[in-house]
Length: 267
Image 1 (cartoon, one colour):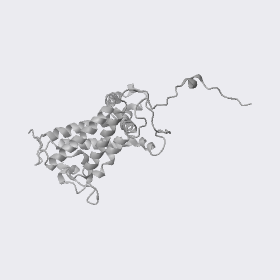
Image 2 (cartoon, rainbow, N blue to C red; image 1 turned 30 degrees about the vertical axis):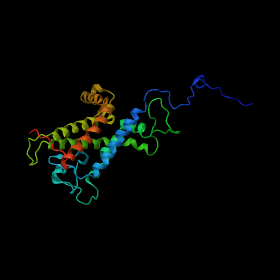
Image 3 (cartoon, one colour; image 1 turned 180 degrees about the horizontal axis):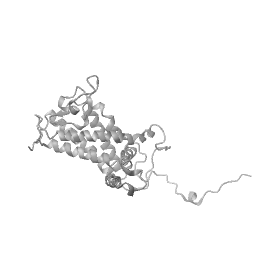
Image 4 (spheres, rainbow, N blue to C red; image 1 turned 90 degrees about the vertical axis):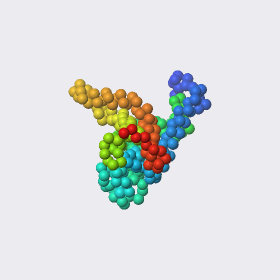
């Protein structure tokens, strides 16, 4: 005589939905906008890497910073030197492409963004996904997402370089300080957004004081943790705003370099 196991009341009462979702709002709008935004950024970034008009005194396009090869104009080189020399066959931007890209691709917010918009996993809350199997980030290649904390340190360096380039934008074409143009302000705002987005990272919050058991013993780190936590609450907004603004800043410099537009000089 076979023995059967009775189903639990919760299992018997669970609704068996045959439709993908019961939501009646435009749940598809958010992933569609995210898909369009990220695609536009990827297309622009690919174009910018191959575009040669990335420098016009005193502005260096952010997508090409730092410029480390001898192919870079002298004024565009980081600290005036070219450690890579002339052996690198690809455009200079390829050298640093993986650092900010790796930081954003593995960012917790961007993971949610492209998981939902590109992979539909899931496309929105309370919406079924087309995938039959879910393994999370426990298998290759998504297990590599755990290197995000290490890309954070590289992102700090990139943010510092963009801030340095923004400071150099206060010089005129003769190298004298006291210049300010619209491009100067754009690069300053861009550096601020990139740095604040980087500092708002979950990894930064953990590194600053996330592992402490007693905040009272570390008052300085506790204050830093509180500051980073406030930024962390705006991490998603900073991620998108900084992405769009760096694309705008980069395009502005390239259009000035091409002579399509003229930089507005205040003094």
